[in-house]
Length: 320
Ligand code: 8YV
Image 1 (cartoon, protein in one colour):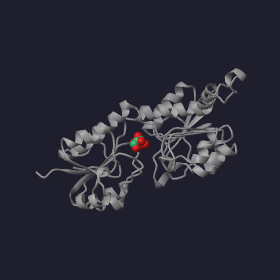
Image 2 (spheres, helix red, strand yellow; image 1 turned 30 degrees about the horizontal axis):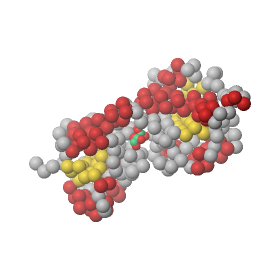
Image 3 (spheres, helix red, strand yellow; image 1 turned 90 degrees about the vertical axis):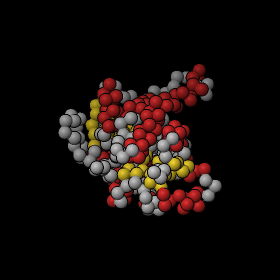
Image 4 (cartoon, rainbow, N blue to C red; image 1 turned 30 degrees about the vertical axis):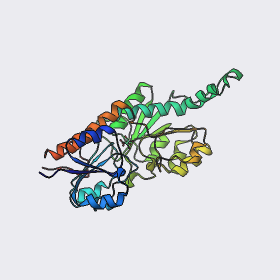
């Protein structure tokens, strides 16, 4: 049997390539002196793509160059960097890694909520700069008596809500639909949710349908004591509007793990004292990244063995 050829455009965790190389012919495109020339040479035989980084798009242009493409196995739960709609229309399955990263990402949402509200990085800098002897650090906002609004109550949103309840926060949510069996109050629009809450946490998927759903009007509705937390995708927030809102006191603070143009955060955001900024580390623990890497490879090898994908995306449902 001819070997199953897999394209890996950018590097990922070493165990992905190590495990795959035992079973398939893996083309590590980043090692090619001339990427374009190598891609042209291998394109006719590539049957799978392994996508390892949200900043490396797998778009229709790339996929349509691969006439034998059957599956794209992606590292991560969010797959807005992959044109899954195109894939679905062309019989290409896209898999992702739901479930295995919920708890670590939810931890970071709570960490950012605390860090932004209680100004923890700023307080730590105060100590390191030797300023404590000249006076106690300033008083901050509190979580007491506050409501957390969760925009996107999926697996990760629900894991955030469980944690927030333990902190005594009230919970409200907005999503595409009101969910049966969920007792938290539902709000029909992001603005209505922002008006009803003090801490707005974004946990919804990226992509065209949610682009800039947190804009200047939503930030105004969140208000001067409001805190915005984003662990989902930068594309959901109008970053220019957020910078203006933080600068002008339209909202109190923000805690962000994601940005519109990763791996860069805007310099205007970095300059702001009321923004706590992490470099997209939500799922970045050894435990969770190992589970994600395994699920990527398990999906691909299950496919190679003719058993179908394990965790296909809804756009590309798998029917035997
Ligand atoms: C990325 C993520 O997969 O799962 C997601 O949607 O954003 C992360 O876990 C990771 O940063 C690799 O790009």
